[in-house]
Length: 108
Image (tube, rainbow, N blue to C red; front, side, top):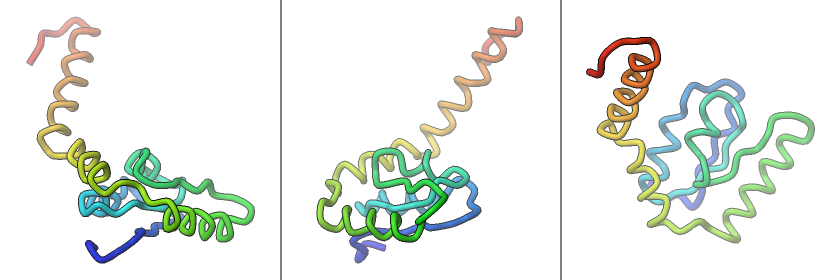
């Protein structure tokens, strides 16, 4: 993955798209479709191409754009760190605590 200039993920059906985070962790920007969790995973670390008319053409144009104007590799690596298991668990605990507080429970 480190040898890539741009990773492409034109999936029509996709869950979260962990491969996006893996690519960004290697300093590789991603062009992906707007399906599933891909947009959330890509964030500002690449380009999300909306499904629809001329998808293939717009997707190819987005790849060329990133090749001509790449995103800083160190930024991409730093962004991927936000998806560490430690950060994910902290966010989950926060959501549960907010739900407990909202509905009359106690904090964990």
